[in-house]
Image 1 (cartoon, rainbow, N blue to C red):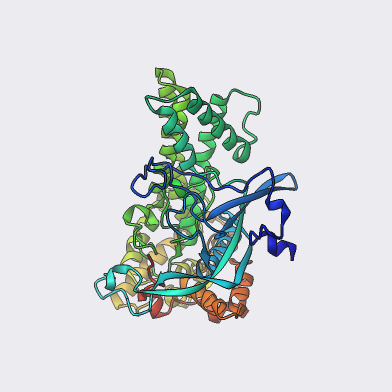
Image 2: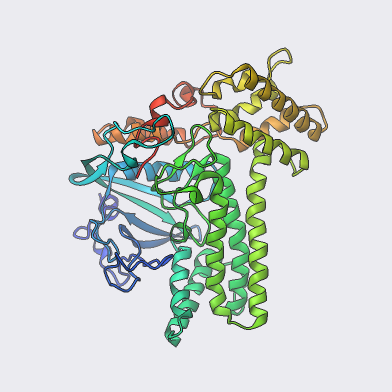
Length: 494
């Protein structure tokens, strides 16, 4: 009872919510937003429905607890600060799935649904669809208002400090009229970032030295983050500096999606554009890293030596992020080390996947079966379940040729002629189960009716996404239903 009261933000029942440490929301300024700023000065863009309520130390690791959907904040810009069950189920399941997929993320501690409170939200009737030319009927926007149960997700992380927060204080400190106080605040937010996210970096050394080391480490983390997304077929959808944590972990599960049919420009959110699309996410990471570097540069000053340091750090960081992204598909193909052969195979494969109606998750998972198939079988037989349309004779030939090249190259690299180690690498890099939108929709639709069976089943499924789990195979290891590829709210969302 006390747990439920605390993590539903019930101040009347939990005295500790009224403490010296006031629950807080944060301002963000990845971009100056004056037109919809409640303060009229551009500093009112921030956490509209996320409120941090406390911290705990567990095994010497610090966790900040944040309620999402607990009510209004100074930055809600006319909104009610509430979250509905639909979006809360998506975030709760997706963040836990991402953790078990091995990609750094905020975690979901709890999900509490109100028995009484509801909210009106725009959503889709299911009539709008992607047309035969790839356009969205109705412009992609919801076509009705619906009443949904309110819910609160408690998400936890070492911190929720975003690159946009550093940007906010850097812009203030860099202004021509900046006060000494503004410069001090930039130093303080960087000290906070180091303490919360990079505590092992040169404790006791001057702030400038530690901040530069933090930039080097941040590039590694951002590279690992976006390469992880590419590996598991995930598109964050709105990966700007406001939604990019300084610690380099996945957050803000709003317009996200796991890909069904391969599309390099895949994104669920109609506002993603090409710059936040699936295969362009490393570029978005580079843009966020540039914002972080230029923000730290304000602390260093304008002398030639400092500016040269910043240029070199930016170059090294960009190379790290791009290298990790490039390496993703070498790993997914089962190669143990980077080679020109592996790079060439990926280039040819990407063009072939783009030209085929192929399921991203199924194809990659089935590659291991190609290696294990009996010699008399067609090389393309194990991957045929991944195609949404039957292969023509021409494409059957093209796929067989590529699979033959790949199989020869990956076996040659191993040298022993045995495929066991390669199969193990393939199955550890390519998950069998991801949370596709049609799966999430089934969970939140049933939960809205008071039935949590599918939600609980999916929660169980995502604990072991790389395992075979034959009890779930028929239901969840399959291509997306036709509706999931075309229907509003499943194929795309506002």
